[in-house]
Length: 250
Image (cartoon, rainbow, N blue to C red; front, side, top):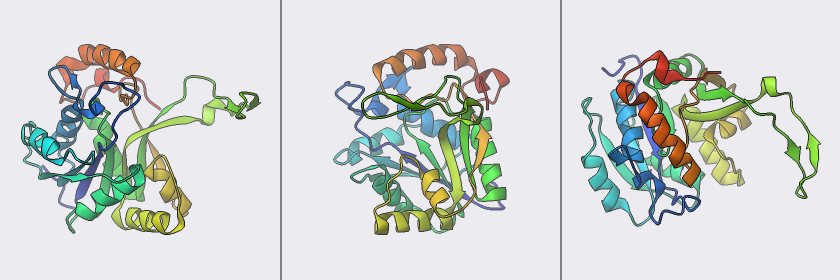
């Protein structure tokens, strides 16, 4: 059931061509366990009961193909889903997704179309935290030591690992904050690799929510190998909220 206190619209970022994958098709259309990577991601968002609508931002020139894919999704919650072609970069693509949303939603959830294993708990926790604070993103603690290096490879510093987190999606924000952030980014030429960085530039606090190490973003062929292993491990729990599915956390 959709929460009645405030509606949350989802934007799924799936406009990238996935050149690092080297598969000849956009990575979101690659198959994993009998369905596309994108299908896994969108179906789990719809199954969460937390979103009132979903816009999938797709590669330019592939709109009809993705509209056909979306029609085949398992969508028992009957969430309205539509597709829109993306822009020249991620920020432009998210702006196009925002323009496609209806007026009813006061929160916007952004999710990578190449993250097929987002847990239902993570989706719900991010939405609940954003409803309280205005901005919430899934994240996990960094396991490896991180180095800051110059262009020539010389190490410049080693940040304190205990304060470092790997940010994932979903990322959920107040709609007015997100629209303002993207408007200013377009006007001032700001660039960012995720939307939370734009919210931070406005001076708003962004809160971390417990994510999962299973919530892998598939980018390279090595990631597909790991994704197949993850799918085998959590297949019995797909669509359910379980402690096994959660894996490692912040």
